[in-house]
Length: 228
Image (tube, rainbow, N blue to C red; front, side):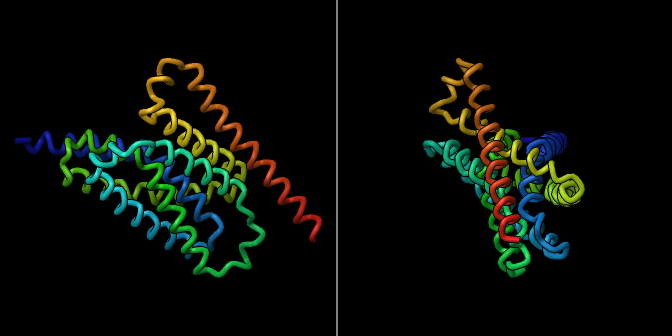
């Protein structure tokens, strides 16, 4: 039976893991909500993060079954690649024509879906650190939520001041996606045995997403200039 000291040490470890792995999630939240009005941004962040945390708690409880699902990391990685590309190529010029409610729902869905995909590594790490103690998992996640929300709010402010950060955010998402794919158990042994190929694959995904996104963005800008 674990002592109070062991409980709190495990809790500190879980919160630390959450914060280390929450950087990508804060970026997703910031990118998904960046085009919304300030008041709507807060709602999207709160609701989206809340929904993501609920799903993550459920996923952690079901982690034994999740780990037995073949190709789970591969599917999550492919999903994240699409999200990284979509967020980079999002056309802000149409924002004024979108109803606030529709924008809010879209942002919430993006946050929840992206967090669900990106949270796989987090779920596995937290489940291991907690030794399957669901009380520790829940408390740890709830403690980390305010920091994730604060991080996403800060990221929105940085994007407004430095638009190039959007490219950095997409690169981080692409890196996370490619890392998930290389960690897929069907590929893990091969990539671990061929480190150069592993890093070349990760670099290829990152460069591919950024290049495709940049070209699409330039095309959108040319079309916008032609129509104006």
